[in-house]
Image (cartoon, rainbow, N blue to C red; front, side, top):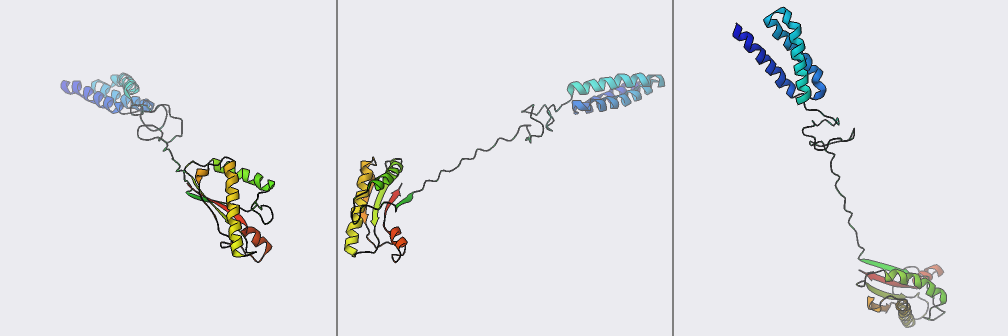
Length: 230
């Protein structure tokens, strides 16, 4: 019987402390209460008068052990401090198994380069029945020259002139060619490298974009186009 009285307290005390070791610090009152019950049981094995003292002694020991050896969660993210690699995480932030907020994945936006673009010049009217640019025409072409000078040196420019259907086909063909060259020469004089221009042609009235039977349609057909190939 004396052996039982000696061994039983050690077995019970070891069980309580082992259980407390896995608890968080915030659970130390529970651990202490469990220790108190165990202590009372230990005391009672000796005599009823030892029950209260045993409860106080073992409960205090169990609570202290839980506080010292327990695994806390100071930032309240649900990951014990022993495994928390990111302590002090703000409240409410989602964390991974290591207690760290997920690393945002960088989104790389793909830059889409337009390989081909066409600038349509419809508001350059030239002088009547001529390929000579007016002062107003030159002002409008200055804006286009600024834009084209921003293109890479490797950009290829193709200029084509177009007319409406008024007049003979052969005449309109020659006029469209002259106007295409007139625009090109002015752009070069404004700083656009001549080497960028790979072709300068006239299409006469062969490629209308509107109805030549109306005044507005003919105005749309009288144009110079600059195709940019990057």
